[in-house]
Every structure is written in structure tokens, then in C-alpha cells.
Length: 158
Image (cartoon, rainbow, N blue to C red; front, top):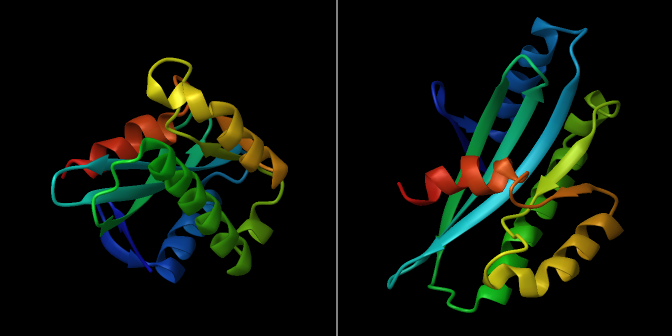
């Protein structure tokens, strides 16, 4: 699994985790949040998915990493939003398995979903919110879901 840091370039999962630990050590008294969000963009040829991992040092900046992959075009919005949600949850589980969250258990974890009360996504909003809360994470939706609707979204177009 490969991630990209905007200034440091490509990183493995292990390198990303080490970079996050280094970031946390820079200010051990700060308050942090862990945010995972996925967005997608569909064109005629493909659907591009981007998952962002954000370590937010509240009031003092953040670090983020992205993971991008492509699939056949997915035109069904419900299916695509379920895939986005699933990818965010899968990555969170991988981070737990790798021990990253053991280091960060005191910090809140948020899953940011690219759904809102306006537009077509409003039809499944309760379904995906229910899914994420059922597995124990805090959910943010638009306009508060910047992990998906701003950070990840920015990289679906490049």
C-alpha cells in the first residue's frame, strides 16, 4: 500500500506511520484528531478514488497523506458512496492492525464522508452514517467533512 505526502513524496504504510509518529513527537502537549476521508470522481473511462489520512494538530496545523487508485467507471452513486465509506473504514482497520492507533488511542478518530443534506447523496446519508457509527467512529458530513470533500477531492482530479 502506497501513500503520498505532498512534500515528501511516495511512502509505504510503515513510512507514513513513522512520519506521523515524528509529527506527534514535535508537540506532545498538543491535541490531535485522526481523520480519514475518501472521495471519488467518475469519468467516461474510470472512477478515481482517493483516501486521505489527516493528523490534525488542532489549532496548529496538520499533516496529510493520500492514497489513490482507479477502477472501472462506477455510475451508480449509491454504490460509489458505499465504496468510499468502505475504503475509509478498511484503511482505519489497517492502521489499527499495524499498531498506529495504539499510539493514538487518546485522540478522537473521525471518518469524513462526502455526503450532505443537499444533492443526490442526501438519499443515503442515514445509511452510511449508521454504518460508520455502528463500528464505533465519529462521522462528519458536508460541510464539516473536509477530509473527504476538500483534501481527498483535490486529488481525484489530478
